[in-house]
Each structure stands twice: as structure tokens, then as C-alpha cells.
Length: 247
Image (cartoon, rainbow, N blue to C red):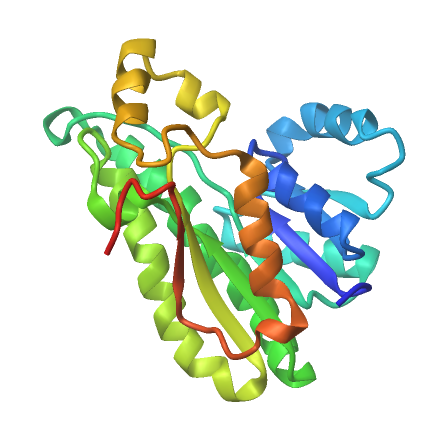
């Protein structure tokens, strides 16, 4: 419903920024989280919206850090009001096969991709239950569903996200709060374009619809799940992958 307040972690990434734009265009007040080291680029993105981003407020904090997340959520609520909707979209990759995966790269991915979901959700969930309305959408990945060579850390974190979704969904359902997962497939983004072209071509051939997805298609799935009318959907994992992986 227009006028509700949404916080998007990783809100200035390739998918996160489009989620912010789609929510703002739909009438939501949006706090777009970015890492403090990315604040300059995030400010440039907001300026590039030429006024259409007037409903988007930038909030810099490290979602992987519990204390910094708490301070960031407080500032976001001071700016836009109590958080009704949380989109956990913060994520990084540090790819390597297990025998080459260093502990710091295991920890970095688990902290950013999975710990952040706990850190920020815990800060807003009580308020949602007290107001008897809330929507939490956690962005996972097709590689959390099927695994991916060289991504033991990423796949583990993304699989963990949906476990978190299902558990918390059961805890808060009777308080009017839903918790769901969206699992994107291969999406047109700088991350995908880091993959060698020959490998991208091989991946594309395995996608039944014959193309990579667009960030907008993920944002539309999020918009559906956060709607007031989607209150009977909780604990689900919505796959948006062009048929690349089917359960």
C-alpha cells in the first residue's frame, strides 16, 4: 500500500537499486542501504534519477555488523518512519573451489550474505509485530537451491537464507507479518558480466527462456510479495530464474 516504509539492504547494488526504484514508483517511502565505503557512488545514483528518487533516502551502514545495523535502522526510521517492509538484498561473492577457499573469504560471504539478514531483521521484527503488519523479503539465489561449482560459501549462505525465512515465518505469522524468499537466477548485472563470455553463452543455453533475467523482473516479484494483499503467502521461495532450475 502506498505510503508504507521500506528498508532495502544492499539497496544500491544492481538488483537492490531497481527494487528501490520500483518500490518508490509504487508509492512506498524507501531507505536504500549502502555500505559506507560505497556512499559516493550511491549518491551519484540518486542524483541520476532526476527527481524520481525523491521517495528514496540513502542510509549508509554495514549490514554485516550487528551494532552498525542497529544504528542504521534507527537512522532510517528517524528519516522515513517505522519500517513496515524489509528487503534483505545485501550480498557479495568471493568465489573459489573449496580447496582454495580461504577462511577470510568464507567468513566475508557468510557475514555479508547471511549474518546481515539476521542483523537487520531482528532490529525491525518487533515493531512489525506490534503494529500487526510487516513484510520481509530475503533475496537468495538459484545457486542456493542447486549449488554452484566454486561457490561453497555463496551457496551455503544463500541456502541458509531460505532456512531463516521458513523459521521466522512460522514465528511471526499470527502477528500479521510475512517472511518470504525470492531466488533470482542469472540476472544481467556487473556480477554476471565478470564471467567469461564463453561461459555466459553456455549458461544462457541452459536457460529455457533463452536469456538472462533483468533486475526489474526481480523487483516486480518483490513488489508482489510486499503488497498488503499478499498476506496469505509466507515461508515461500519464489524462483525467478527463467526455468534454469525447477523443483
